[in-house]
Length: 441
Ligand code: SUG
Image (cartoon, rainbow, N blue to C red; front, side):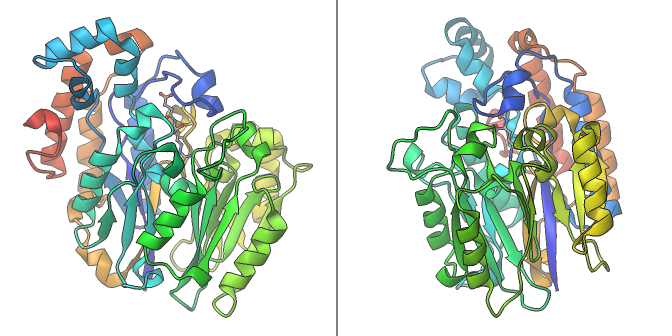
């Protein structure tokens, strides 16, 4: 039996709107807004709980230490935590803003995952994403590695690729796995925005290179004939699709995407058919620009819905962001889709508004991990969302998280102390050990 488990990033207590991601329209346009970290984390937790209530296997990945003082220290700010904090704010405020981002919440960017049944060595492989295009995200990889090793002690977790723009990698946000009902083996689609060695002429950064995707394919020992590469379209990137998962989602044998998501959709369909030949029959659900303009798709994050197969159901269900309901055109498309389509037949809406305002929807918040029954048993059970963990985390969030953070509040040293003491308590709740975060040493 194969299970697709979802591991969500628990939203950190410094969640704020600093506008750090150029090319991510939501992050940019909400720069300076006052955030509500408590609401953000509760929204994320309720989304996880909803998945459990629907019968899915749900995991949790802990937030990272923020502000990330080890980086600040390594850049020439010395002394105790307070001295580092004070002098860095005085001399390099932008550095501090980047080190405060709660961006590890978007677990789809933590790694690319290949299930054991796709890999020649029959091991579950993860490659941690280097996130080298955005400074505030490039500081995530070491802690992500630690976190994944803890949660999946039996898996082959590869360190992030060498961090250089040639090998820019943003993890599962640019990767889709498709498979059939009968065979465990699937095909893996790697989507990239640019060739690493060629200068890009896009308005916004293309955050994944072809070379990074090819390296991951080799690391994971994937079967070449079951691997497909596709290029994101310039139109999509320039319209704000900074990751492919903003305009495309796939599950089982179904790829659901916007007409303008890819550079060459005819080739992509033919490559997928070829790779899937003899394994399963792919289904393509393409949404035309005339039906939903790319702008509306990106504004509502329709394609950043999770596409899931619920237990005992033959069809797929869309877990869509509430923002879809706020756009009459997209909402009615969605309702028609589930009423008429034979593949996607249900939709549930989730409220992840705090994350959405930074450009992260339901699918960004989770890392999907296909697992064999035996592998499921080997997962660190402290990472599994049980009723107990859900209640503990809820109380923990309410106890430690602020309801408001404005850009100026990041300068308040108490926010740092609050964040460290919250994480310290979390290491007990999730039994992460006394050296999980660097401030504990
Ligand atoms: O990398 N936003 C994230 C959103 C990531 C969404 N993930 C997926 N599509 N899978 C990003 O652009 C904004 C943070 C800020 O502005 O403070 C941010 O990092």
